[in-house]
Length: 256
Image: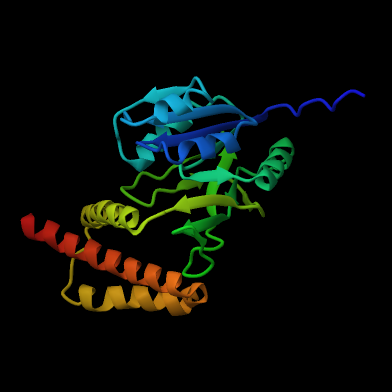
C-alpha cells in the first residue's frame, strides 16, 4: 500500500531574530519545518544559536543590532515567498495553527492575519492580565505590511483587510524571575527613550498614579486574579516596570 504523498511546503517565509537563544531556537525551528523558507537574523550570538539554526536553514544572516523593528524588517525584506510569518525565538507554531495557516494562504483575500498567543510565565499559561488571547499581526502577504519603527513593543502594520486566526502561537516567555527583571530593565529604558523622543514630559504625579493603576488594571480590570499568585506577581512586576520607565524619562529630561 502506497503512503500518502507529503504535503507541499507552505508558501511562507518565516522571519526570526536572535541573540543567544540556544535554549529556545530549536523548538521554534522544529515547529516551522513545513514552511518553504526560514530567514534568521542573528546579532552575532556567542552561544550555539547559529549552529543550531543552520541545521534547519541556510539563510542565517549575521547582522549587528539595529533595534527590534529594524532587525525584523531586515528579515522581511529578504523574504521571497508570497506570505511572511514573523516569529520570536521563544515562540512556536502548533500543529493546529500550521493547518490553519495552510488553509488561509491557499485561498485568502486578506492582507494579513492576527494570531492569538498563549503566553507562559514561569511555565504557566497566563489567561488574565491582558495576556490572553493577546492577538498580534504576524502573518501577512509579502509587500502588504511592514514593521512600525519604534524603540520597543514593535508591531506590524498591514495595508488592506486583516482577519483573525483561531489557533494560537505558544509563547514561552520569562522562565525565571531573573529573566523578566533583565528584560524589564532593557524595555523600560527603550520605552523612556521613545516617550522622550515623542515629547512626552515627566510629571511628579506619574510615579504616584501610573504604577498603582497598572497593578489594578491587570489584577482586577483584566482579571489577572484568575491566575492566582502568578497573576499577582505579574501585576506587581508590570507596575514596577511602569515606575521604572517614568523615572528613566525623568532621568533623561534631567540630563538634557
